[in-house]
Length: 171
Image (cartoon, rainbow, N blue to C red; front, side):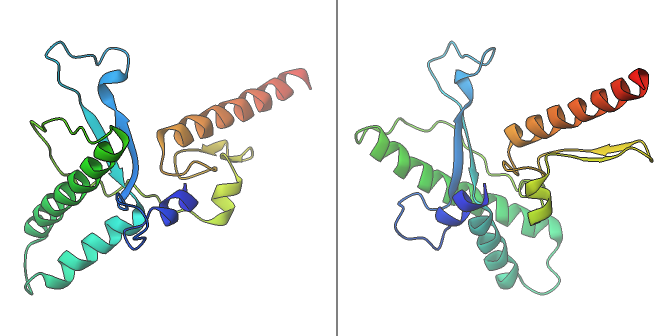
């Protein structure tokens, strides 16, 4: 959420892993277990750290540099920043033990931080009965930018549509 992102921003020097918004142990999910003893983690930066990284690289890019080259630079810098902060967190949270990293990759996920307004935060979905239109997603509700937010928004939208259809049938 936005308060978490602001608290864990790159500018916040009180946290040794200041760029991290969240981390998920992918191999703990059902059906994603591994038999080789390795673990897979997915980490995402907070919006402020991502914006600072993108701005820094864009400002230092030579005039006329291709978008693809800039995108590759951002991915490499993001990978380095996120690995550095993630390993700091693992070291602290795991009593100084940091497992060997066998593979890592950076990716610029441009839809990771949806534009959110206060109105969208207050609504889990949007429903226009007259136009028979419903909108939902991770850009609405209190958990913006998270899969949980998309799920809750979708469930809220479904409930509204079902109630709307049910009230038409009953009326």
